[in-house]
Image 1 (cartoon, one colour):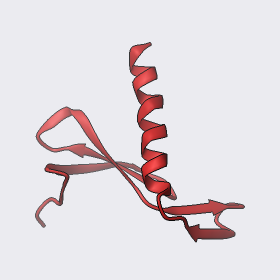
Image 2 (tube, helix red, strand yellow):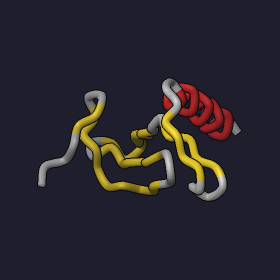
Image 3 (cartoon, rainbow, N blue to C red):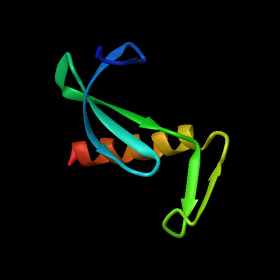
Image 4 (spheres, helix red, strand yellow):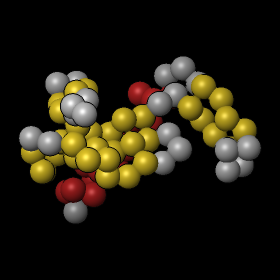
Length: 73
């Protein structure tokens, strides 16, 4: 099976997956990863789940900023 490509990056191994996010190694660079998110929003351990347009972009910005701050420390 050939690796999937997202945003010009060839996805490597799936590192971790949650309800709304997936983190992949970048196969060409061990220092980089790809964060994939979706517009799904959940509550009550997925008792309630809905699609919320635009949630993915906001979630990715929030996660990216948190990772930038951790990297600075």
